[in-house]
Image (cartoon, rainbow, N blue to C red; front, side, top):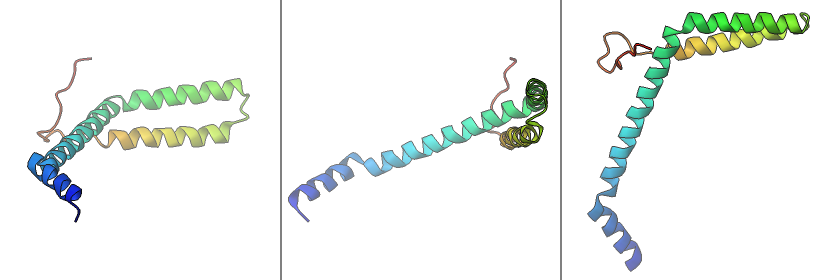
Length: 105
């Protein structure tokens, strides 16, 4: 090992970079999980509204196109609805202590 590599390794050990990187990684993972839970909670609270909007959009596009894209629209709507449901299923459980406080919005 060259002197430069030893110095770099010693600096990493002295600064405890591995410990700080592990802490940063854990914080980032918690933030990501909190974001997923918040998005899931929002999607769950607004699931019916989202499905309703998708239905309205499908109906309007079908009207404007004269029914030419009915099959495609059904597939797109189905995929989007499944996506809403998938996100909504990521909501925290009511007993979960990590459950973020609900907003009154």
